[in-house]
Image 1 (cartoon, rainbow, N blue to C red):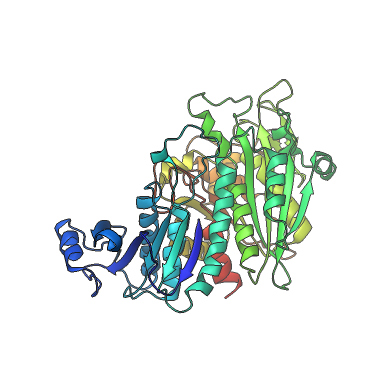
Image 2 (cartoon, one colour; image 1 turned 120 degrees about the vertical axis):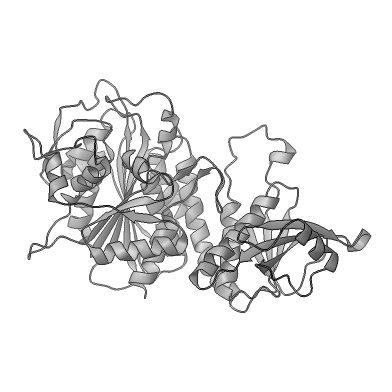
Length: 490
């Protein structure tokens, strides 16, 4: 969706939106419209909207009101974003092509006004390229938002937030595309196109290169598919620091479960089992577009998990790049097998100062947290606290769960260094323990600061939210970007 800026109210019959705090109608609002809004129980609560009309003939005007609530401080940013999203949701398929948001009298800062625009753009994302029989009433009509009377500095603030919108759009696109369109090779090609001209350094490892490196764990997952695996690294070097920060994403472009085949019902959802890799790609695009003052590497381990005569079997033992051996108890616990080699490779290639991995790793995390929070596991309190704060600030919430020796011993194998699943209870925790075994130590015996985000419950939504329609949410892009802003650029 296009965003433009104007100094005065636009002419023509475009819908004009006004923003108001709770119980604080703009002083210049038409009296009849004010009475109608009150009669309709509109009070300016967060996300609340009202529509009315003023004038007639050439002076006819369609007016919308959107509530900001009574939030203060950081909560005001969230309320502003929600107001923008509510306006787009109301007019996305209304027949209106342009929405003018008049900030006069809103009391918003430039940063808050930019959040209104971000909410509007995020909520307007839809992917209809495969839908050929939509009626006129179902098609997206709204294509432009005009910011009128925006506070000084809003355009500069929007230049940053627009990068977040672009990164979120890339993530949603990758997650939404079906598995016959997005598979390891085409994921890489899509990213190469998206990052062209951004200054991002791209490194791609093919099957032969990964074989030479000894990535037996990742390759074992992919061996049942005709789609060859890939390792994709995206580096944005916007600062000269001793060690970069690494984001690592699970990119299983389709997950049948392999020989440990999933039930057919709902298997179509497994096209988004690459949501972690999608989030990493989108976050890297956002960082590059806004020229972040940070050195960040995004790594995506890309495979397809299929059952055929060459597929990995339960009971097989594979050797990971680290040299550690794994007894594969369940071929549907494949994401950790992909991530462990990606984690080893990024540590040995780039020696990062800290690592954050994102993965739609376990169904158990949804049993624990539903669809409201992603789980976070970490060996470093400062890193965990930074991610928790970033998630809270942007509405991509995290909840910390424990790890420790008592859980770690649950994945010991009688014939190999470890097995890829533990008992049924604590499934998300033992998955995190598996990954922690691949976080390497320095000369003093201290592990690299690491956090694992299990995002299985939040990358896809069965119903619309404040800033997304039903489908891909784009979770992770804003969280990682905010973490970079607060931790690496502060």
